[in-house]
Image (tube, rainbow, N blue to C red; front, side, top):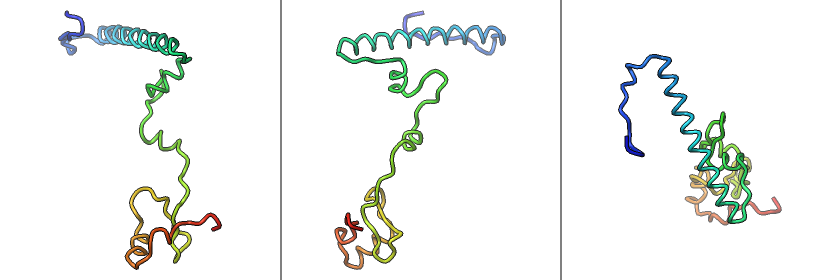
Length: 125
């Protein structure tokens, strides 16, 4: 087999024990490759003046052993909520941060002739 090539194995012909052994070998080879690459990364980072630990590397690649990878919902849950920037003068409970789609009340206010600046929350409110 050429380096980087593929091996065609009829997995359906293997016994459970053979599959488990193959899986263990593949996992070991993969883990060794990851460890080698992390060591190389640490060496390069150290030469550049950075200190990198395994936990930092795991965070950077998004997962550690036994951890799920970071997905968008995990990242979003760690963000702080954005303070509202605009308030509905007819209903002060309705506000908008200025991000995402404009709410209906804001569109109605703009259609009625108000300017966006008129709806801004002033620091004294």
